[in-house]
Length: 474
Image (cartoon, helix red, strand yellow):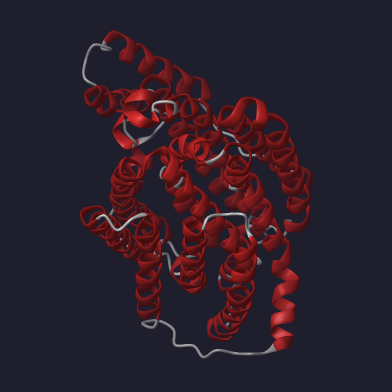
């Protein structure tokens, strides 16, 4: 790691943040179009299709992407050999799934329309699985901003297809085609960009695959388990309550999914550094984790405050009056988002520290709780129970993951001045109360500014940290 590494990360964060904010804006705009065009019932079908897309991704993952990123980040790693084998392995897995999953889809008790949508998202998975492997090359070189820009273009293509679908009234299936088009564009561009710094050949070396899968299978099973507690609730909700309940729950959860890009982006940028320092320089490793922990705490407090005060306004803008019931769900699941931030952090610590097997046991327990609780409470409380179960599940993920980190690394992240962050949050709440008669957008923009300005004044955010974010040298 060179002395310019912090500046490279800062540059990535700035560019990637801008592109991701635009991406999120497009995603929310697309969500506004889709919810109003489909309505709660058909939107429930859309959410179900997305849930199965997550299932296909989980079944085909097997930890290949994460392990590839970790291995090429090791000192003196042979990128061409690793990527050549990983890509060949990924293609083999995708072909197997492409042959088997349509049979499963055929026997599902769903409408013909939904089955066609599931075949389309299966195609989306194949494109996604190919380009995901190559992302590690960009992470290692700290140029993830390029991937962010590519994904922004992909999102623009998806929203364009949605607009065309609505204008021509082509129906639900063409809304799903937008996802496939976006993934295809992402794959082509990431592949072309990656060829600037590596040209690899597919390597079909079973012995190398065996060694690789021995490392990656715990991560792969963790991905499947994560899908169970993160996405399977929508499938259970559809089976037990129907499309409308899925639509109401899904509208709120899609809002949160569009926010989770930021912790994921930060973790993605830091993962090569965490992999490098975890065994080489423990003090540096802990410093990086503590800074990330501090950033996440600072971010989640205003997010929770904004949602608690303005859930109805957010849902009305994003989904429309037909989804008014989603506001209550949003107020509940915002706390799940808070735990997701820290779940990502601890999960990646476990990954770079090669503690995947212990993580798998913890995640399996969380998945078992999630499915059991949903089966028990959905028939009585519908989507509200699913929301509460999501919060409790994500809390358990954080607690168990933190315990494993502490047990094995004898370390837990910490931050100074936590009380001052809470004070800034309380001032933000007071500001919203005092100016509650002002328009929603005014408060949405100004209340976080009050919060962050106070953090700077109280020196919770230092001038040095601000300078790191604006310094342009790379």
